[in-house]
Length: 296
Image (cartoon, rainbow, N blue to C red):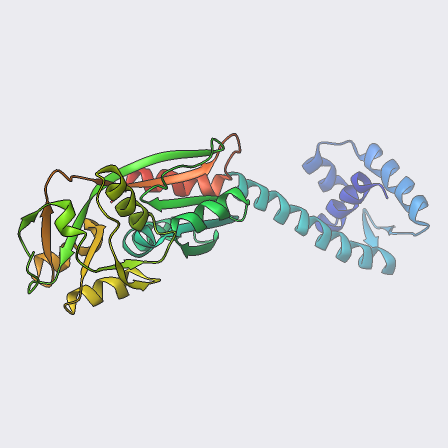
């Protein structure tokens, strides 16, 4: 079917006039008339007949006009969608985040983003560092937000550091090391309450012990979430090695106390990870740009 001829017919049906359609489309009336006659022959239908100085649609013409209106309305929707998608106003973002940014950073970032890009669909998975990296490499997500990078990651992953925060040893105020300065060997003799295997902070603590030839700490309690691990320490059991973002307010309120370990001053990296040589969608680029502008 000749869609160009259908468009000409659609304009005639919409305006009720070949003359008006000719003016709007900047096509001569004889050319439009010839195209319509050819189109009617193609369909084996009479779509319009002369009426006075104008035209009238036949019954078949009325029905084709309705269908043409739907067709070109969908065309406009496709064009608008393509424009919005290209500008990042529409689309979908699949995101994986480790527990730290998921709980303490993402809510603010995503609230700002959705206020600007309401039509963009968001799919967010909260997991540990190894899980986020796996999803990124398996193309299950478009980007990953890390709080504490893994010790090693493939060359196929591109990492953009947003900022750093400190890693603290913390205990309850009643603990014998609360507010004190101790050696790493003394610190790791205490029972630790930590996240599950695959947690970047847990891996950093084990790597720290290897670097300073200290015994690996005893993980006396293990939780899948930050909140649970911190709550156990606040309740008076064991120690934790954690991002200052997580416990800063607890320390300020006196619910937790820092332990200052000699020679240890570690930073925790908050970063965006993407696959190298693979362009992000416009919507994902908009999200990354917003995070860059409001890292904390």
